[in-house]
Length: 177
Image (cartoon, rainbow, N blue to C red; front, top):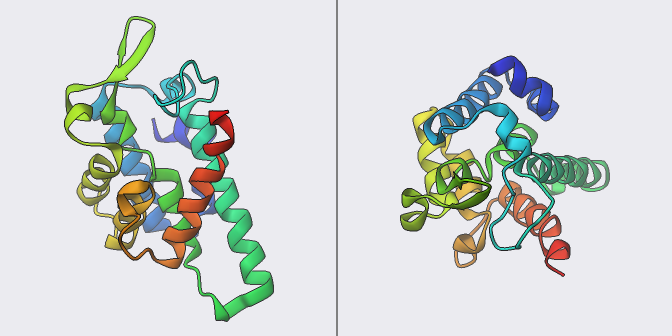
């Protein structure tokens, strides 16, 4: 499964810290297995249930958000450098995993995708933090996952969390029209 994930999400290789990359992969594998999915399902699962009949998959959304984060981080680093420090590896890991909880929040019912029993109780930021913690990821990654959506609107986000939050909504809001 690891090789397939590296093939369909090449952004894993942007994480330079090998241990962090491995833990990020382990978190994704754990969520896929716990949710009863396969890596190929990532290209079929809708990225949201809030937009009826969206044609954007969880895989496409995850990669888009991650690429947006990478682009923003590189632009900020090139212009502001140490004035706005960004932990690139934490950002990329958090971006890849920001919606990992959806693999527990969603289920397939025939040709439709709906909320699972777990998803009716816990939105994906919460189940995503559980997965990250079980995979041994640093709290900084759990923070990014927990605060990427509206659940984090009343807390303080890290620099990486702010970038991820805006990248996520940049890849979501225009599709709602």
